[in-house]
Length: 165
Image (tube, rainbow, N blue to C red; front, side, top):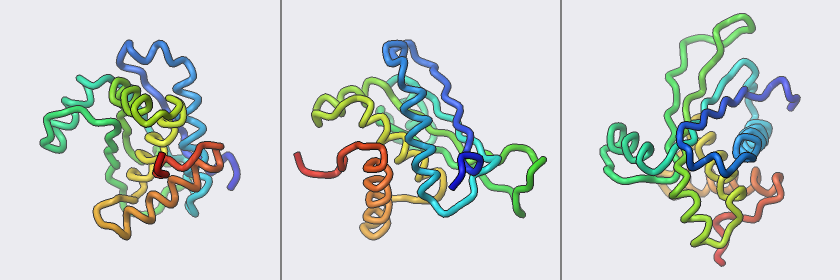
């Protein structure tokens, strides 16, 4: 798939804790581009917004949108898609928003003995796949989604995040 068929990914840093991770935007851009390239779809004219937040911010989102009053690592908010096919010249096709929490990401990476950038890539891919309709609500769906995550991450040179350590 050509580069022009990939979605535009905008990364917005809203928590100061991310200032110590100057490569985070590039890591996310590469991860989402690789995931989109592996999906048999044309993402030209599509946009994804990624918000880099902290545990407090993601806890609020998790509480407001899912009724779960605790922080989590990543949340995805797929956009409603308009009827009909997107055409060049139309307003950008929003795939949705992803929020990633710094402290939870950092803690999980440390506990799982993974490089921070590898875990960030995994969460970006995971969030993107949710935006385009993948989920892990049952075993079959989880197996499909996790297999795709493994394939994308392997293309990025990142080991299987689900392998036993």
